[in-house]
Image (tube, rainbow, N blue to C red):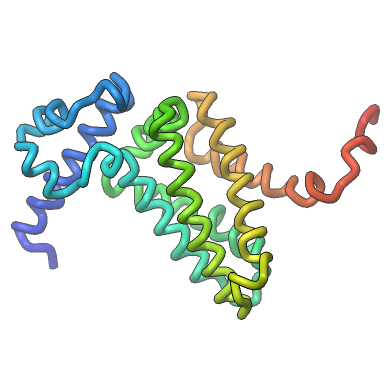
Length: 211
């Protein structure tokens, strides 16, 4: 059971997180200072650094939570599922749980706005791609463990994750340019793109012209 002290610390951390994301999305990541973040919550810089290493750390806190939830969902998929299906179903069936993870600390709408800020801020986008590569490596090792193969000698785990990650990137770019996209629209768009992976990789695209 959470103690009063633990609850106070959690609330302070969440207040700093929300204030930071609000400032990043309204006035820009580069333009926001740590002084402004702590001022919004009425705490000291020392308190901020007790919870976060810096601006980049706080900017990606929610994303790290969602990625950890997704990796756990992949681990929990039935062992008989093929790797790509496990990735697909972990995302689509676990989407509500991922949204709940976000809502536990900040509104989903704010999280989506932060994604758009990441896409439009070169320093954050570079960090996002770097962090995504690390998550993809973790996922590849999870798939290798599921399938009983050596990730360092069998390329299939990394190939499967690379394809899945590519779909997610294409989806992100699409909905980041459309402010009307909500959580359910994102799930549906991702499902649509995942369904096209097979034909995109092995189909004859020209055969569909003129029909």
